[in-house]
Image 1: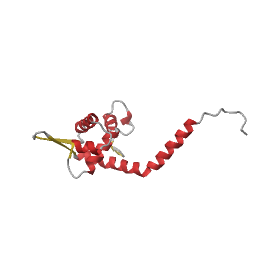
Image 2: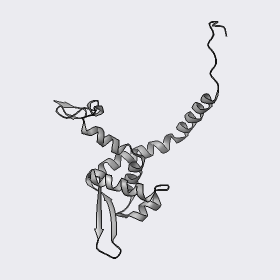
Image 3: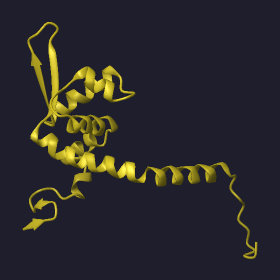
Image 4: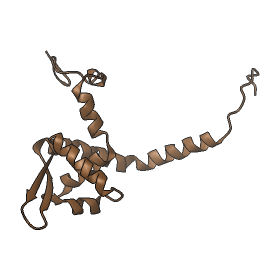
Amino acid sequence: MDTAFGRSDSPTLVESYLHHCPAREVLAVLADKWVILVLSVLRGSDGPVRFNDLRRRLDGITQKMLTRTLRNLEREGLVRRAVYPTVPPRVEYSLTELGASIGELSHAMGVWAVQHQDRILAARAEFDARAITAPQPLTSDPSR
């Protein structure tokens, strides 16, 4: 029997919230903000991207965080790392087929974020303004 998320012997989306489900780990990797941004940069590039080019495009990322993120993405099979035997060694990163498929999703998330950023910022400001206001005591008189 097929389900909306695959064959019936595959975990469902709800089961992916369980501690023992490997999909939960995959979701945790994809939920990282730098992962989404790295995937977006690689997806938007015409070809492989060198480390320092990635770093320049990702404002605010540290060398350590970019290295960790790329290593995690390579481990997950989403990014391919190519090292060329030059002095100094040239290292380039590109998306694998699997990475390109999730790149489409991360791109859609980025488009959604841009389209709705004003609404999100307005909701944030409204929430913050409410949080500043001291709580009002409840009264038993409904006319108040």
